[in-house]
Structures are given as C-alpha cells and as structure tokens.
Amino acid sequence: MKLTVTAVSVGRVFGLQKAALTYLRGWGETLDIPLIMFVIQGGATPVIVDTGADLSRAWEHHRIRMEQTPEERPDAAVRALGIDPDEVGLVVNTHLHWDHCSNNHLFPNARIVLQRREIDFARKPVEWHRRQFEAVPDLVPAWLRAEDRIDAIDGDTDLAPGVSVVALPGHTPGSQGVVVEAETNRYLLAGDCVDLYENWAGDAEADRIPSGFFTDLVAYEESVRRIERFGCEVIPSHDSLVVERRVFR
Image 1 (cartoon, rainbow, N blue to C red):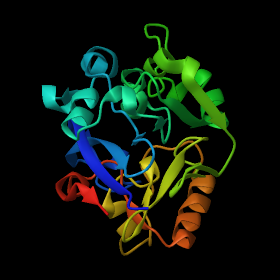
Image 2: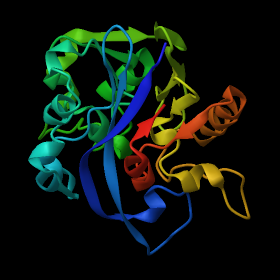
Image 3: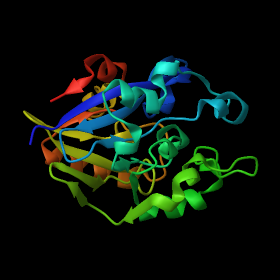
Image 4: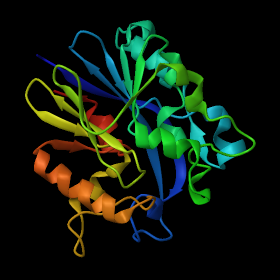
C-alpha cells in the first residue's frame, strides 16, 4: 500500500520559551514554532493526526501569541489536498493538550482515537497541567466538541492497513504516536514525545532530550527507549523543518 504523510501547517506560535521544548536547556531563548497537522493518504479513507489549536482562545485564555492564515484552517488545509473534511474517517490525537485537538469537530464523520488514560487525565488533570487541557472554570475544553465520536483504546492498536498507534506515555499519561508504513519508509509521528529534531539528536550530555513539559519523566525515558526499538524515522511535532519537507513517502 502506497501511503504518504503530508505535514500541514495549521498555525504558528511566536516567542515560546525554548526550555518548554528542550528540558533544562535553552534558558532565555525563544522560538517560533509551527502547529502541525499530519494527513495520511493512500488508504481506504484519509487519516488525520492532530488538529491544531483554536486560535480564538490563544491570547485571552492561554496568553500565547499565535497566527493562522485562512488557508491554514484545518478544514481548508485538507481541501487543498483534495480531501473533503466529511471524507476523513479517522482522527488520532497524540494527546489532549489544546494545541493538538481543538479542531476535531471539523471532521464530522471521523472517529477520534485516544488512549483511555489520556481521556481520564484530561477530565481531571493535576492543577499544574489544567490550563494545557483547558480544564479550568472559564473554558469548556475544545476536545469535548466531538466527545461523542471518541474511540477510547488501551495501548498499541492497529487502526488501518499500514497505520497503527503506539502508547508513549510521559509527556502526558496517555500520549501516543502513530506508526505509518509508507511507500518507501516507516515513520513515527511522535507527538510531543519529540517536539523538535533537536530532542531526538540529543547533545553532549544526553543522547535524547525530553520536552520541558511532562507528567512523568521516568515513563518518558521508557517511551524514548521504546521508540529507538521501532526502527522508524521519527517525525517531531513542532519542528519547522517538518513543514518545509512536507511530504513523507
């Protein structure tokens, strides 16, 4: 099966503290990063991985500077690939941070695949993580707009020929990645287990660098070692080089 993965920009974040992405590294540095939606084509139905943020909430509720052009709206972006949003059969959220799941409702006929542990935690996160899950008094979490179509799973699961999810807890309790057996390569869409290529490349002190934001650093290390055993090319979630390359075959 000739599956392809297309990395689509669905917005940008400006002035993010680098240490939020590279654990204990980059203090005082800031980054502008993309929000990326992945579109898997070539199977019976298109599969979407992560749906980006609701930018109407960015500053008022999250105090984050973001930008999105009309062409970068998730529904417009898939139309530009020749896909009607109604034709999308599966949406996978790598986790339920608001910048990865806020537009699930734009794909009305898709079932939404999440780890059960992630759903449970998102409903009642520890207080330091509430804002990222929009579990605060002044907001209804955006992911609940499509709550009735969620398919809760436990652990690794095959979704379609050549497409499977793998549990990668650590960044959040129910973080997951998506393995794609593409035409000429095997890819892992790693979610925020790997934010940047720099996380995977490591540095002089560590062979891998976790995100600066996590719920369980020990589980995170186990997930990183697990990724190493997959033998996949790892695709980060917020690296501009991913958007520049765009198509992964």
